[in-house]
Length: 160
View (tube, rainbow, N blue to C red):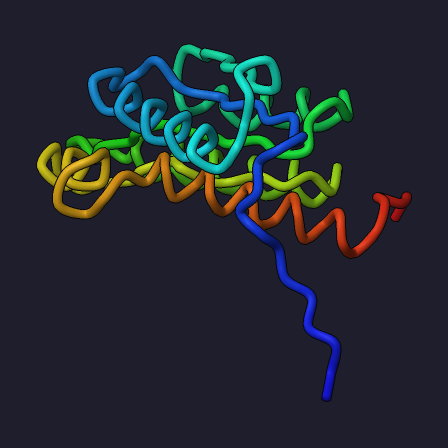
């Protein structure tokens, strides 16, 4: 039988940063509430949590990368809301945000939970921000916890 390694949802002792975009604040704040709720429910203490606000979604990857490079956090949760408009701006920003956050996670081997909503309509964004479809901020925080605990089991970060 193979040895199975998987993370847990235990936040006790983990240092977690939550990076949240102020753009589309009416949804992103609900994502933040969900993420903080998940972290506290799973044992995080206020002194182990840091909330970092950025202007918009485009700034999320740079700040996530900066925090990851500092090496002070076991997990980072990235939150924001992108709603499609009438131009190609949505596609350009969404692609760069997701690529940038993935690059930060890979480069610095830190657990990052992705809670950036990409929605076609305002209604879809509201559904994912805490109504019919749950709260994607909560989900991203839980994923970050699981991954951080998995990384702890797999061993220390090493240079590529």
